[in-house]
Length: 124
Image (cartoon, rainbow, N blue to C red; front, side, top):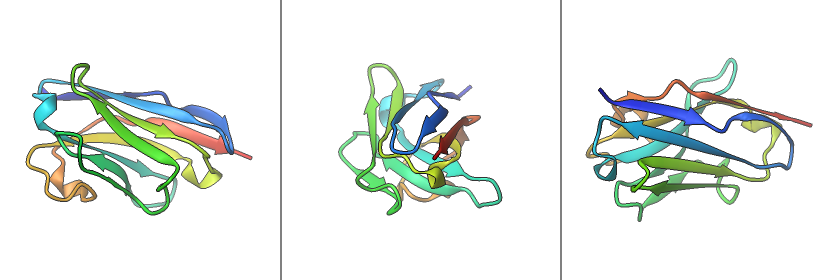
């Protein structure tokens, strides 16, 4: 059974930083692409960042480029999302996802397992 568990969310003042982690089990992590998505209240789920299984290819939503960094540690079966210069509009529940044979890191349809999410709240 594939499981993904996010952690690291919380309450942070605008301009601050958080690092999200997503620990996975039940799948060969090193063969899986990983993605971060988010859903804000009243809005659709949106792509945040993705990383290929070998870690060379990354992709980011325009709204987070230059502020967020996705990385992975295959030895720990964990993917990270370093979030800097946070803004109130980054407030959302953040989800990690995993997929095999992902062609488009930005597409939620490419991922077949999802975590339960972790809340990030940014206040002024």
